[in-house]
Length: 320
Image: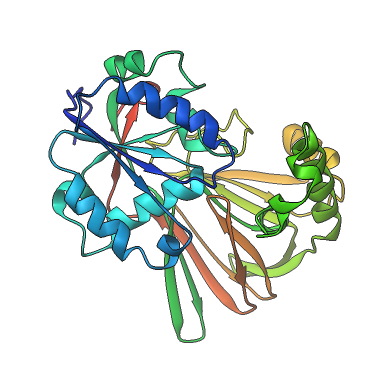
């Protein structure tokens, strides 16, 4: 699918009501609703069960999406990841769903994909639809092999192993947002800062084999586009067929120190890859588009671009 404009006749909005900026997403959905005639905008609400068993979601998508349907996603990057992984890797989705054009809305926390595709939230969704093109994007395929079990996950924006993944695991803990302070005005920022700082302090280095050499690593981040969690100036685009890597070899126990090191490039190894292979020798954490998972020791990890693309409505990217 080459770069082109398209007149969408219908819109399907996948909504995650637990996303961080759900109210912001509601504002954008109302704008979209005003642009489509009655009966031509459907809402599909996802739950936690859909992440592990997406069969219900697939049934709804197959029924709701036809040709010239815009698939908007009102959730965070994890929700977008669910949609992309489902439509690209499930044999049960229709060919029409697999080729649906995705518009990520600004309803999550970092909203990395939404910012890379369309910048800051626009004043007018009508203007965005009028000026956007369709870009072809290949997500990263993250394959892990531990003993006889091999698993592949897709990373639309980024994958990381080590300290930043441990931070994500702490923040995404089910009890985290139920804290009383978190719900008070300004409480979220205070809670996040305290939790992130403690997580960077507690995060440990791990032994890994990279290019045949044993190394201790604090954090390794592989980024598919120009932005990851609001860190910009990354010299790759979503439409590139390589990805950007930051490998942190020294522990930085405070978040401010960690960010300074990244921005200044001290003790950070940076390069671009078309593929990366490593063996994680000690149990640690990984994250895929902000969703944390445990990586056991003696796990082989391969990161490369997936062989099938998804299609993104964008004012910032030219399709390859």
